[in-house]
Image (tube, rainbow, N blue to C red):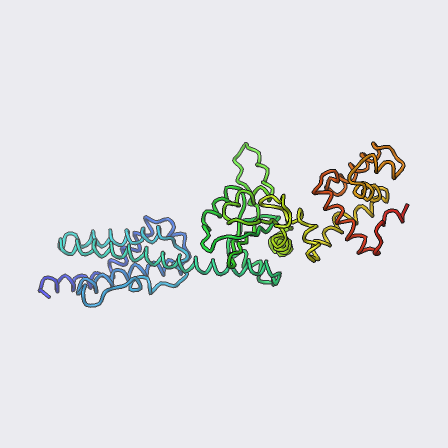
Length: 398
């Protein structure tokens, strides 16, 4: 090492403390976010700046002896610091340190000035690498946590930790949730699915289990600009239709909405049962609601489908009016013929029409449609079996 460099190194060591003090002062003057930090964090930032100056002196003494690494500068800072300041703020910190050191050494030696610029460039790249690795690790952790949450929803084995896990994922869904199930290739464009969901006003959790793709959907609160009305949220079936391109060929089934994400296991069970039988309905849409597959699911032994048929169709009819139940039985038994039903009940066809309209208003299904008639007839059958094994429960009440 030549004598001039030895002198420069000795001089740098004598002013290292002075440079650190000037750097802290400059940070307070130029970076508002630094002054807003709690004292412990400000101390950690100052330690990083001081370590950077010391590391530069060591590097300048012999750049080839021991290649410096990012931990030389950032290793002295607590982990919380990297989580509390962004990459942009870190680069601002590096810029302040470099400017302070450069102002102090520029008049001393051109070679020294070039060295500090070269070193600052390497530190900036190192900072980017530190944040990139942290983001990658965080992404892997988020993916594992997301898979765990989706698996808990599918199995229904949720525990007290599920809400906190959902919150850790940054879930933005509000209120109701629904589960969409289908098949997909092993390579799924997760980013495209998230973008599509976001444009549809929904948040999504994604789970890929072999060739089965599971999407847990929740609506996000739209941002409403001043003076504008809030747009109506899309129905889940419309959101599912926009996400259909993310699935490969085969049925896509949407489970019924539930009150919140913690209750999503009920929607998942219905969707999984629907996927198993969806091919048995030739006219099934893509996606199709699990409740539109209630007859097939009930025939396949799905207890949830049977309970849904009873609770949503049979029991409301029994509780409302025996004549509505009887009219629906007759109408379905007579091939959906108004005249034949009217003759059997000894009423006018318009009376049959009126009663069928009341049935639709009560339970939401229209018996005049072929598919909905199948759903209603299935409900009457399983409801009667569950109640007393008889076929015509309504007639016994007349």
